[in-house]
View 1 (cartoon, rainbow, N blue to C red):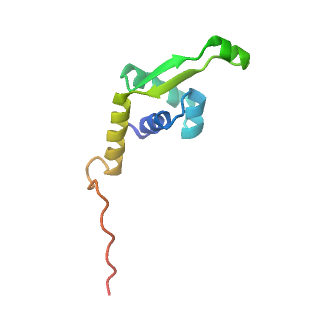
View 2: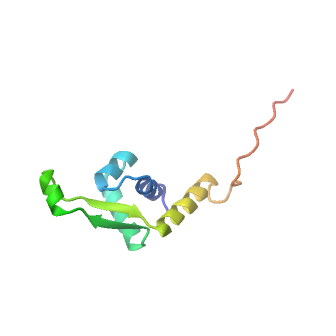
View 3: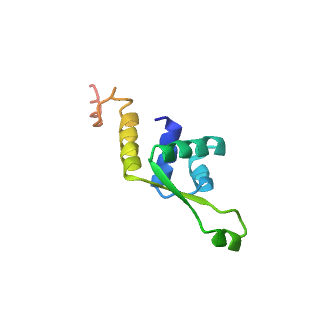
Length: 103
């Protein structure tokens, strides 16, 4: 999973639920965020729902599509974070001890 994809999945997992929210939190453009969300939905890492039309009309804006992570998405996120923290398994998962100062 790319860094951008992990960033989007983390934003959704942390509660950013619609596209503009996710773009604001991640700093990624719509041309990056929406394709990632589409792939995640196809892979069942996230699910989405449209808000009621009446609510959007009341607020005088287009309806929003809300995203949330699934259990599979939460697991994929945890694995991706571990992967990047250890640089793909090249580093130990536990932090190294600080180097001792030489006298």
